[in-house]
Structures are given as C-alpha cells and as structure tokens.
Length: 84
Image 1 (cartoon, one colour):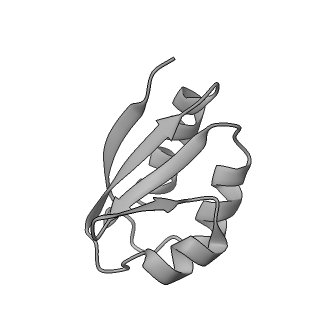
Image 2 (cartoon, rainbow, N blue to C red):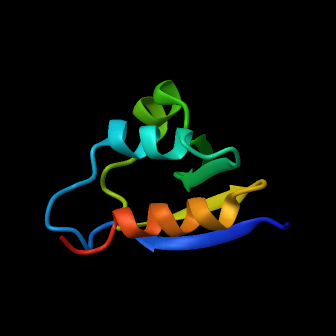
C-alpha cells in the first residue's frame, strides 16, 4: 500500500472534536497517522505532540496515513469530522 494524503475540513462539525478522542481513535489503527500543521509533522497518536504543536485555528488539516490499515484509518478519521 502507498501513502494516503487527505485534506479534511475540520470545521464541518457543530462541536469541536476533542484531541483525546482523535488520539484514541488513531491509536486503534496499526498505520502511521500524521498531520501537517504550521509546517510541522505531528504524530496524531502522540498526546504530547498534539497538545504542543496542533493549532486549533486550522479550518482544514492535511492528514497522512501510511501502513497496513491506512484506508480504514483514513475513512474513520474523515467520519469523525462530518457534520453532527
């Protein structure tokens, strides 16, 4: 499998996604999941990196998925940010 790159609109939801929920969801998958934010590559599975480097002001984020279950991870993360 190859690397999946997906830009996700993080403002479609009425309520923001808690970082802890996003981290917990990402950790359920074996693949690497990263976000590009403010010219930094952030490991979505790392609480420290997410708290330190993630910008809550971003209207959309570019996610990178790489590994054996990357497609399932990409689909699940995208569903999290759908309107609710």
